[in-house]
Length: 134
View 1: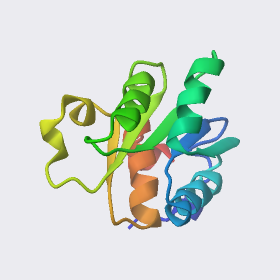
View 2 (view 1 turned 45 degrees about the vertical axis):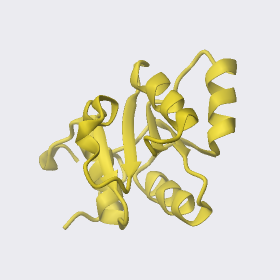
View 3 (view 1 turned 180 degrees about the vertical axis):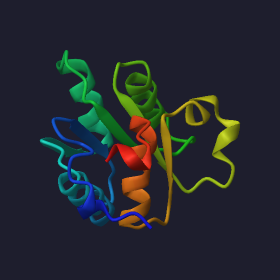
């Protein structure tokens, strides 16, 4: 069992963007990112994330996108961040997301519903951290 509080250095000096329209989910992920030491965490709606992509030269270290394959804007956001130097974590409720190459090639996947431990594990997976690294 992972305890996000027990590994506060995992996201030290990392920036995180969370693209999620459901505020309770976004706040939960944001809190775990802060607990893990992220220095800059932004919660953006899809349209704000698209605007961020166009206006900012610097990409975040980690982007978490609530991904729905039927939604073209979410796909655009996920594709943009997957082609950047940052890590992409895809949140999904899809039954078989591996059929989508974009999702299958993400650095980590976070299946809804999830708790704090699963969020922390997704960050670890995206960064390639081993249990003795933190």
